[in-house]
Image (tube, rainbow, N blue to C red; front, side, top):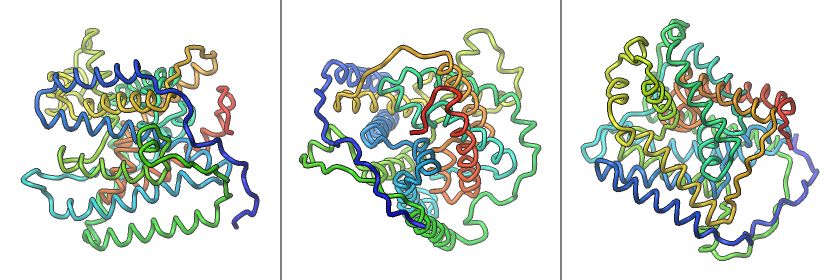
Length: 395
């Protein structure tokens, strides 16, 4: 039942902090260097798409982690509603492309993965981890780009967790798994899209009943000021993220993903320290071996992750929000480390994070994307309970 209690006004949206020109120059300079360092124009475009993702996430403060926490603790459904919009529009745009199977000669593949017990367990662990780490896959990256030193600790642990899980993938894959990957298999693309949009619409109606209203202060700035300096509304950020993911699908041939990059970075670091990839079954696959042998700027996910970090840095400088703080309590360290490890391990065994499994997965009609999000929200409920132990507020 909806509440008649009106929340306290949020902070004024107008941004009065000065633009941080030196930080912006550094962000743009690194982007220019990476543009010169990638092998192909296609990679350069994907780098810029990554920059766009970072800007949208930072200017919209589009957090999956905070959305679930606000939903569970405050009955604030604004973040969830933005995600439902994200998924609905993405479904409408993805399905015709995936049904066709190609675009201008580029084969297109959805973010499909096996759906079984390992996804339930992995996503549940991820849900706990994202509350303790205070960021999901995309959230960790954009917060690091914006100067989040705690999130940098989480990111390092995230990479380690992803790599750690690769040594156990064979065992996890022995757990029961459904034979169906995509909702389009039993229903066809049109039928699956209709069912999925109906479910999303039903969830939106439920959120209207659950929602506890929040007041916001008016923003009288020009459209140009809002676009350049932020903040953006959650729906606006959601639509930009959808548009960028569609472009990613067309250019990369697959939707937006994040955590493979983390896995690869950790594996390359381990190999540099003397680890032999031939001793681990996961890393003897053709794709994995090629990725290990090639430069990191040849990997699509890594290049887009670098772009995301730099886009968030640029957006934070435009809004005057880049303000890294280097003091971290013992409990803060512990929460960041544990959260990152749980997210990394969980994402790897569940075939993705909130982006690769949830956003891109559901947009691709993947059954595993739906199982992933419900398991992750259950894990988030546990993580919310644990947050105070690590000095984190649920406010």
